[in-house]
Image (cartoon, rainbow, N blue to C red):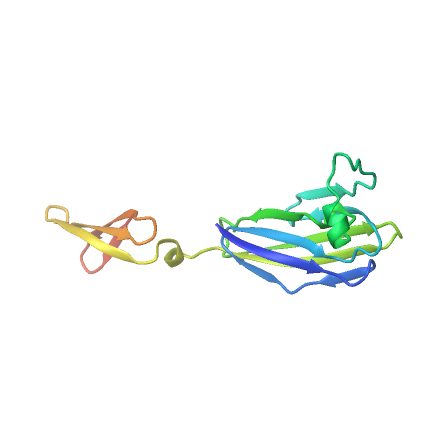
Amino acid sequence: MNTKTLILSTTSSSYIEVMDTMILNDATILNVSLGDVYEDVLPISLQINWGDNNILYYDNDLYKLYRKESIISEVLYGKFGKILTNTYSFEYYPSKTATYKKMTAQFLIKYTNKDTTLITIPIEIRSADYFESVYDMKLISSHVLPENNVKTHKFLTDKGKYIVEVETLETTNQEVVLV
């Protein structure tokens, strides 16, 4: 499975952006960091729509028990909102029936001054084709059966080391492939 990291950044609490289309090759884990998102105004909540109707809600814990929770991010980085310091991950899978699958992920951040930030990420997931799935194939053996004109060929794939068997039935002027 592939892994891709995306770092989102904004310049104000009232911000709207539609990013360029992100192309993912085959199954991919997308890690999204919100570390550079505007935080001069305290964020209240984060809503993530990953594009497949999987919507997650995160509320900022405004009241902290300092005897139980770490304040390192507040002291060192000035980050008071826990929702913007986390990295969020999601697994994207390609379509089983199409070469491309298009989705749109959205990150909606609400702030205490009633401003909102909306970042939209168009995502295109490309399915691996047959060659990318097996790479090259090497012929292991061939058998010709004279009584019914069937030829059997066995191949070994480079990726995965699978054995693929192909039978051909020889007719008068053409061959028919039976897999």
